[in-house]
Amino acid sequence: MKFARYFGVDGTGWGIITDAGLIPAHALGVAVSYEQLANPAFLHRVEAAIEGSAAEAIALDALQLLAPVPRPGKIICVGLNYHDHAEETGEEPPEQPLLFGKAPTAVINPGDAIVHPDAVEQVDYEVELGVVIGRTARDVSAADARSYVAGYTAINDVSARDAQFSDGQFYRGKSYDTFAPMGPTLVPDTYLDPAALDVACRVNGETKQASNTAEFIFGVEAVIEYISGFTTLEPGDVISTGTPGGVGIFREPPELLQPGDTVDVEIEGIGTLTNPVIAQG
Image (cartoon, rainbow, N blue to C red):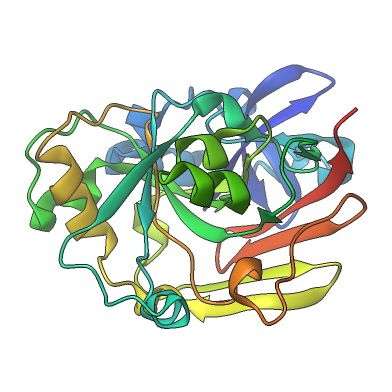
């Protein structure tokens, strides 16, 4: 079951995407929150309410899908978390998750433009599985970690490599406005196995990254256990779980994003997140 935030004639809201289109949550008499999405009983109620509700569906082309978390409390990213990406960088797999932050104001919707800043030259793409937290998590064990997940989404961890490498740390290079496209759906943990998902990134239709989350060095459970061991995760926080091999900066020669490009990041079971790249105006 895929949930999505949307903008339509009835304003902004949550809905459930079905074969017939998007059924607004209010038409089902339910109110969606990150806390509720982590609640199996709520999901059962939604499943029951959807039956016989096809007449309430709105065609997807009549709506604008929005980022599932428009302004996260925090975005915590995991670096070097795919075996194939570690291999292409020439780095040994880390012994514990390598973490960095990304500004919440970098989030944009599906279809919104990624702005290529004038101040940087090396703008790169990164397909990543995003984990949205649904319950307050502190000192959570790996065994219980997924019960704290509201759902999974796709994130393009856009990166200014020249800023990232010259600074010696990641925050500026990862946090330019528009550098966190997110969407198009949010799929609760009940309906997705985060350890066995195909992930891909295409630029102008050409595949640049193609892997599977089975390549994770640290799975979702281990990452939540590690992060919650030192900081409290709250509903609406987002963990971006790292990118596979094939990023532009490590290609020979490098293949970076330019104004006029279109980037698709696709994750099995979640959908395709598409964003154009434009020059800074």
